[in-house]
Length: 603
Image 1 (tube, one colour):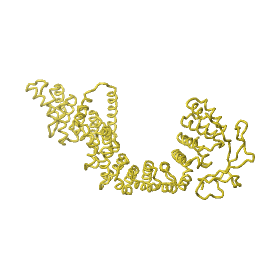
Image 2 (cartoon, rainbow, N blue to C red):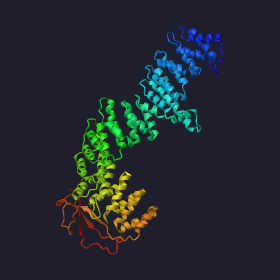
Image 3 (cartoon, rainbow, N blue to C red):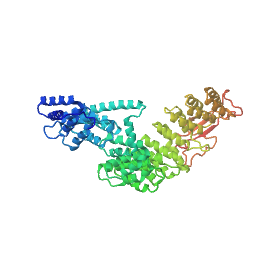
Image 4 (cartoon, rainbow, N blue to C red):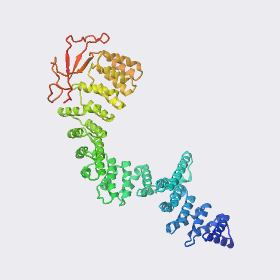
């Protein structure tokens, strides 16, 4: 072999005998042979390779493997691979061969299928020492696929193997940090680039999707997601192959890539008969991936998915509901509404997501079932929020239906969670108009939400107040200014607009004071003050227990019959303005007239 030192026949015979002596039963003889071989250095390598290949008993393979590792004899790797492939190593020999591989392999072997297969075989060995050295061998390869296998060994049942694998991961992390700081392109980076250029980069990852180890599958999925849309045709091909575990991995990646081209193959996988646990898992995974791939314009899929929403497998039902919520076919939404009252909380959560995503403006037929779901049980906060969001997306025009929505949603303004309060206030804002204003009690509740702990609730409360605050309502200016002083820009600007709607001298003074708070508040306050001439005096209201005779006829606010009295009836008393708030042309009423105010949603 070129580069080998020249040996005469006597020297070669001596080294050959020394290599054979590595398997001798006498320890002194073994030690002597080892010393001779080490002294010869590289000249001993061919004879050690022959010793590794030698079978029978006694065998010199254990000491020969260690010496090859000590001499850094990478030319011995094919012989070591061959012994592993032959499956004739004894339990005592395999740890030594694993140790030799850990010392001889490096990054240039990462794309050698033979090297990887040899280490894979050692990683599954019953002997813990062999598995620990296999972890080191994977670490020597250093690529992402190998790192995933070390991570799998870090979950080994044996604590010592786990510790060794964790040590390998720590070294890999240090190596990666150094590589990230190196601006030059090393040999390993060149090998990776060449592999990608040759088009072989995806095949190993696609193969790993079917691996029994979770860490290996996860690493493969992450790499394929990183490959982007270019991996989609190969993933679809993998989805159509018979191996269930690989199909599950392909479906997961297609869902994460949101590959619209995969919609039909995923539906076929989800509706195929399932006889094994893996095949049953594939149905749910494929459906959930399909939900991520849908655009909403697909036709003809709902008929195949609706039966799956009634499947005995809760995961299949939940994933099917997600799909139905993203289809344009409204038959699917009716199934989703029915599922919102299921007993299984996991399915109900998926139905809630489907509702929040799938409700449309013209889904008026869903309003009554949604209200029934809100009334029949105490759903989880996420479900309650989804129902409110779905209702807010529907254009509700029939007056009786609007009244029912107002009445049912109003208590949620003071709901237990911020998400529920926010959704309820946002929904109710669209349920009223200037010619159909909200009841005073509701406005008072929403004003209280200006002090809510959650900033988004404060913003929607300010938006409601800007749209529906009754001019002159007592106590409103102080609450609005307290919210304004929080310094939250969106909230503060909405409060300024609500002050303008209040239309009183008190509100005008508050707007003047806001001009001292800097931009953008000063500019907006100036715009609102331009041409502002208050025309309303402040009034207050108190609940009453007995209905006095009203001085003015009550305004009809509902299509439903109204009780003679109830807890929702309040009266507003006009108060004469003080000297600081007098508005020319608006003298207080001499007779202390009572304005009848009713809560149209209280039934």
